[in-house]
Amino acid sequence: QVQLVESGGGLVQPGGSLRLSCAASGTIFSIYRMGWYRQAPEKQRELVAVITSGGSTNSADSVRGRFTISRDNAKNMVYLQMNSLKPEDTAVYYCNADLGTGDGHGRYWGQGTQVTVSS
Image (cartoon, rainbow, N blue to C red):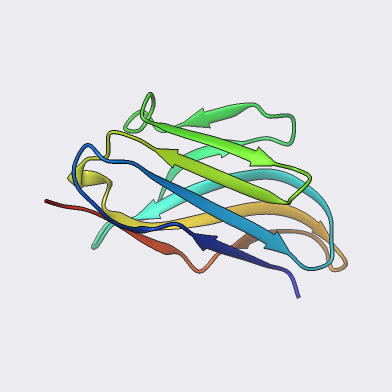
């Protein structure tokens, strides 16, 4: 069974940092695009950052310069380093990956990890 599991969320003060991790496990043949999304209360889920299999990245204007996405292909993991956190970054953060598995090619989601930025 293929799954994505996030970790690293928590409570942090404004200006602080957190590092989110996401591990892909199961029968995975290929990992293509990986990304992070977030959803704040009563708001739609939005893209935070994405990274291709070749390492090209893109991120939302609201986090550019503060958040950095990276991946470790050998470990099937993707990370999100979040610096200079603001209260408006508070949300549930979801990992997302396009995978080639025994069932074919599909897009998978993690269960989410809560990030709360508050003093």
